[in-house]
Length: 400
Image (cartoon, rainbow, N blue to C red; front, side, top):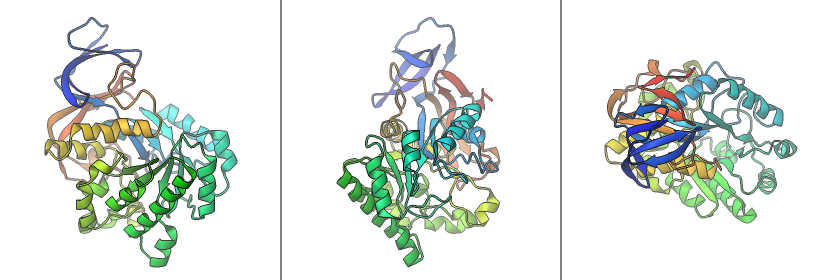
């Protein structure tokens, strides 16, 4: 397959190139034309590496009334993602080898892009972790959706020692004791938890990854330990407590949205982040009215940032690093995250001129709502290729 007439983001700049795809991989990146079994006119679109979201909740099994592997990966592809990593806190959490195998089986039948799985840590599932040999482990230090809370520091330390030190342990870093004592989950709870786990990780000399940071101070504390990487979610950069009135009962998220002063400072320090994870957390509106935590963000995550690129506020280099190459490195995902000879042909085609308005009823996510409903965007995913197969083209799905 030859993809012609495209502008490819390579080595930090946009270049007019043609891509030769063979057996699901990028065989060549060339200047001229070449014979191929199939030719695709790239319509002068921008081509970026397929996006990787390291933090999604696809809700299957156990909560498929609000998302499943099919609807969730359709949302991912429409948002430019070719790989997503699913979190373990389902109603039946991913804490045993049997549960992990169940998820893999379900996803293999229903997902339309690549899906990986974080494994959940509990106070006593050390044997199951050794049996499953997962690629990453999730430790939840503050109460959120599900029942995987670990507050005992000795248990956390045991996981830090026992889990493969070359694989990341993902931390939901909020200090539960602080939240209960002070009856709120302000930024202080996050600062305290990040300090605890980063000091512990340094003591044991292991890799950790801090999920959904919401303030610059969390990053600065975490980065004191060289083997700590840091992620944030779009809503901490685009929303704050000043949006509470507009969001109404939809506003609940963990950690909660911060004061506007924290959001404004975060934007000035986005280069300190290692990656972006959407924390895609779909709930029905009825559940949101009941206080459920989280926002569905797979379809908006990239579009928020490419819109900011059109305004001159972020670079393509920043977007591709934080949403492609860096997640691939952090989570040991091979042959993904870059447009490179020998890598998988995971590509997204972007129409930078397309102006559009987000309408909830047009979303692929099963929950059919967004905190960005009615927002105007410039730049849209036009096509998505995953391992050499075109899954999405001209804003339409080619697979079912």
